[in-house]
Image (tube, rainbow, N blue to C red; front, side):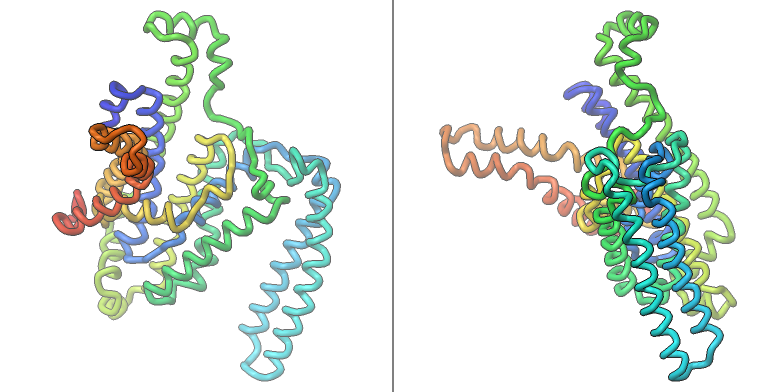
Length: 418
């Protein structure tokens, strides 16, 4: 279908679909690790994807020296104060016996610590955000190559998953879904409102790229000569070259994660995870630490989603926190896993490509279909205008229809779990 798109529409469109299909397949693998392997119902996928995107800014963007000198150290000191308050509170709760004195002490630490934290932190934030807010107004990153941001996106998402898992994994599946969705919204709210971190809703653009810029290729005499030998103009050839370069990078990451997921699935650890998924009580009776194993797989799946998020932001070239819509895109990733085949890594990859293709192509196909259906109607007809304007809604209709058809005729997915 992607090749047909190249011939019918354009190769730029086809390769762009391929690139986002590769990223979608990696996201689907992350969710499949959690749901297909362990039965964990995580609806906060976009929160971990957004953390991966944040990693690209923190790792690859150059630091802002003026912001650091104005209040950077004060911001760090404020964050350390907040961490210290949490650690001290946890130690008191752990070491003291339950009593009125412990309750009073904990409340005192939290209230006093909160005001100390805000007094230190707020002043630093105000100073940082006041530094040229139109173009910077944030601390910047480490200035490292952006490829380092991909594994760091996984690390950042894994760290958040550890914190979330320690508090939420004891919940029943439906409550876990509510908790993870709420936590994803909290992560996105922080990214949108904390300008000192990544400019908030003002966005960070101009992220470094792991591939050359088109304009540089167009100035290269050797590249122009090769493009001419293929019958392509330099502008079209440079665009295709860049997109194919991204395709090779993304495909390499997908193959690596897929191989590791397959090895994990067929290992004793993978069989243990599926045993826990199918019957937690029986697995616990056999001596397995169910909560610890759930935490492991939750961290691994979230790390994979974080890597995909870093790759997606790299492809876009900018971080836009408002583009992460938990309910909409989490639903899309879950459809990929369910349609492809929950518990089967190859099914998750297939679902990622297939659902993303339909998500992109259904709207233009729907517009064409509506134009064909309404062609006998007179120009200016209210019904004709309404049907053509409604073509944009074909996306959600098609996703729902695909999901229903698969659940009816192949409830275990297109490539079922063995």
